View 1 (cartoon, rainbow, N blue to C red):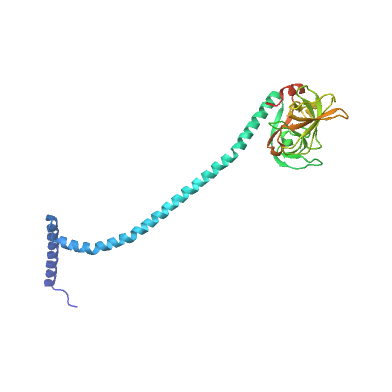
View 2 (cartoon, rainbow, N blue to C red):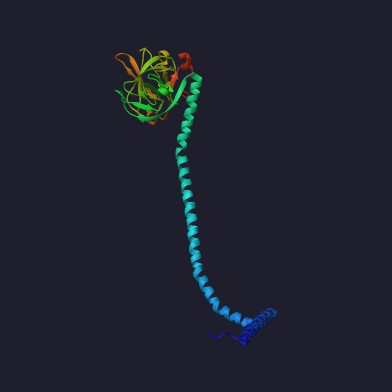
Length: 297
């Protein structure tokens, strides 16, 4: 190959200098006024590139819109799920409000009764219904020997006498209801303090009744009389003064001249929930009887 000559090098440098000067001149002319000769070239390039840019924008626009819609839909779905969860929580609170309120009122009543009578109570919840041993009407409560519960202790609710403990294990106990057909409870009429024995009929529904026979055959209970627990020695198995029910009717037997009172229990045995076990009776059964009368009955 033939090496470049000095003349070729000089020509190249001159051409390069001319191109640089021309570029500077064009830039100066373009910046000097509105009617720049460069505008024609710029316009031509814009005419070519503009539609391409618009096409890209037309294609990219729907894609951006779709992406935004997906984002909006995701946010709406999250909001909807949050609202549904909140609605479910509110529905649950509404459905359980009655139970919570009833339990609160029951606790208040039993606390007041314990304060007035001097009973030492252990609260419990009914966790099961079912027969035990030879009895047909029993419930299981979630309190046992670790809580101080023993056999032959009185069980009551905010409404009145429930029954007595027939068996106590470590954490649960079995309670014989006063409406069991094998249950016999000493009762006292609040009107004249006459004594009698009340026996259950084995029912749990609203038809559940006890039948009270007075010890004095000449005594005739009256409709509307309240019946309270008579009480046992040492408060075992029943403490005195706990409301049992009210006399609905009186059945007389002319043959032996006796009268039997049909007693409607204050307690709704088919809806038992919170109960209390009397683990310590009042020092005086007479004081318990005087202060343990059912409010409003």
